[in-house]
Amino acid sequence: MSSPIEKETGFKAVALVASVIILFLATFIFALIVQSERVEYAFIMVALPLVIAVIWKIFSNPVYGIYSVILLGFFANGLNRYIPGVTFGLGIDGLLILTYIAIFFYNFNKRISWSPAARDITLLLTIWFAYALAQLMNPEKISTEAWFYAMRGVSLYVFLMVPLALVLFRDYKKVNFFLYLWGAISILGTLKAFVQINIGLDPFEKAWLYTGGPSTHIIFGKLRAFSFYSDAGQFGAAQAHAGIVGTIIFINARSLKEKVFFAVMAITGFYGMFISGTRGAIAVPFAGFLLYLILTRNIKMITIGLVLGFMVFVFFKYTSIGSGVYAIHRMRTAFNPNDPSLQVRLANQRILRVYLSTRPLGGGIGSAGNWGKRFSPNGFLANVATDSWYVQIWAEQGLVGLLLHISILVYILGKGSFLSVYRVTHPVLQAKLFALASGLFGIMVASYGNGILGQLPTGPLIYTSMALLFNAKDLNEEANITDPIIED
Image 1 (cartoon, helix red, strand yellow):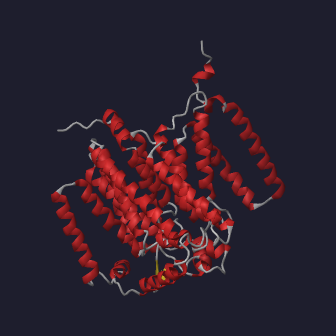
Image 2 (cartoon, rainbow, N blue to C red; image 1 turned 135 degrees about the vertical axis):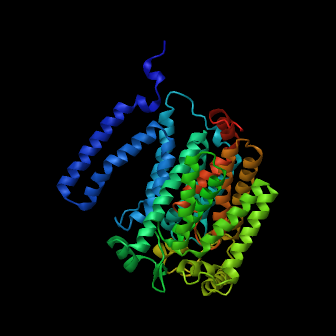
């Protein structure tokens, strides 16, 4: 006869020990606070119950590790405006590692099945991560510390997160929870941005904007909303991403609850995109809807969609209607090939082309962008703005890295789209996968104009989307059982 403990998960088997350890740590930290009277320690003590609750939830069900990464991704950068000096982004690393550990504890008395992660996408991401590790030997590398910080967003997070999501997102309910979580925070983000535009900034936001925030957030006296995101550029792209995903799900939703929620997600998403003043974000809906039309394989929808897309293009490119509204005027400049900002970017790319002509492996990860300015401010790449995600990959990892990166992304998009079209029969699930594929393509295209793809919160959302697309067949089988569609 088996013992009772063998019927429990590993988490429950060690729960008593974990409780004792947590209690001891809490007591120790409290003693430090009383002794030191430091404000940052007080913050730790206030946050400690929440941290303990999150850890407990992750160990009781590891999928909450992914949800926690997504949540922290939305707030990590913005929190620095309120609590400076704390690198909240490193929490992403901790949560991902913690989730892997939680999987082992959760399956303490049984064999862990990693077979869902044994796929071609995992192999490709392993190659990409291995290339990033090889960059440590790049003779052009200036700072190992810069490599560590920059490498995380470029390759580590996607390498760790996609296999986790492949293993943990195996049923339809988790897909829905992911989408509702995403939509709820995006709606909250636009509400915060609405307050910034119409009511004003709080003292912490003002301090960030006027002392350390990018000067591009106020143009001709008009504020570009940034909400609780890192900056207006990331906010605008993320909201455009939410807008297209929400729109596609709304169009295909069958329940009133889903229609209402995702309609709100779509409307607030596109509204947030406009008040951010992020011109490059408009590429997300243009590219995303184009792919969606192709995936539907519906000639009528393709025709209507192309006509509407052409009308929007003509509105921005060849008319001045609505130019009195700052948001519309700002977006309209994205269609001007002579825009001064675009010309500066093209000039910088010409400079980089000369520099990289003899450096096929690039100047080293972390040598360009913000990490370059922080760790090697006198370096050549630190003083040439990259602006684009792909240009930064090119600058830091060379033509070899850029081609490898783009090839992997195209393969993931192509196969993920194929699976969603030809391996999914559940119409509602298929529409949601179409939305994720379209959002992925929109972000891929928009990342030429801004450094979007690997940034928070977009990165974790994209990586989870990739995993769901590659889990399409298994999700379809489960959805047809748990949520069968009965035709009228």
